[in-house]
Amino acid sequence: MLQATIFAITMFIGWTIFDLIKYRKWTKENIITGFVTSVISGIAWYILFIVF
Image (cartoon, rainbow, N blue to C red):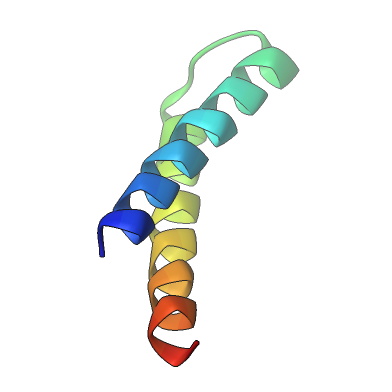
């Protein structure tokens, strides 16, 4: 569970930095998109951790 949480936080930070570099500004949409992506990737990572 800790690995999935760390992975999700890392995905959020990376996605947000990528959007900041791409669009040159912070927007609510970019932050929400990063959050949704990180939650989905964290869940997927946890499922893979359970399966394998």
